[in-house]
Length: 161
Image 1 (tube, rainbow, N blue to C red):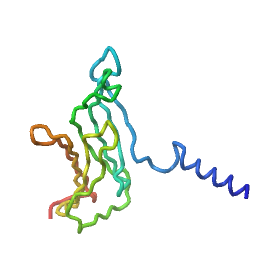
Image 2 (cartoon, helix red, strand yellow):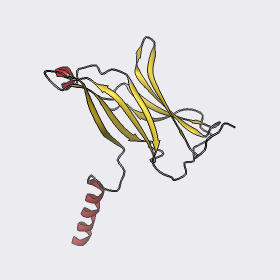
Image 3 (cartoon, one colour):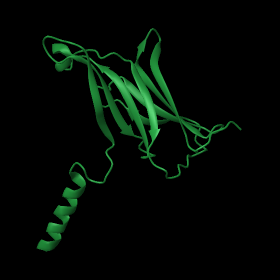
Image 4 (tube, rainbow, N blue to C red):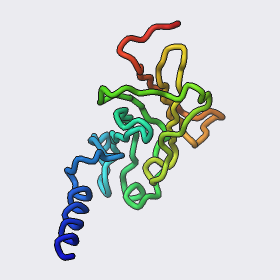
């Protein structure tokens, strides 16, 4: 009984500790200060990455502005709804999309104060056998949301049919 408990604890710690073999779903890559603030943190641009939940070998990178100052530190500042999106495939395993699916699939939605105005959806383009990722702002400015697009081929060579 005692041995089983020790083995269970070791297994739990192996998968729960940072650096374990299980891939992280979301992480911050880095940040750059863009404007000095005398009081509170500086304004900055942050780069964050997250895995596509259906295809873990596809990683989405998003850069976004984060407001600084006292109001930014307290979470009261309105972060700009502008961002950039890039996608990379990190594995070689085959990706088989559901070709019957014609609508978008939500890959990421704002859950934190930082991303409260953004969502990322994935489309499958059957003509070119590519995934198209579209990031949109949920904050409407002048009637249209800000958006960014990135495309990743599912085969080594992509050509139109």
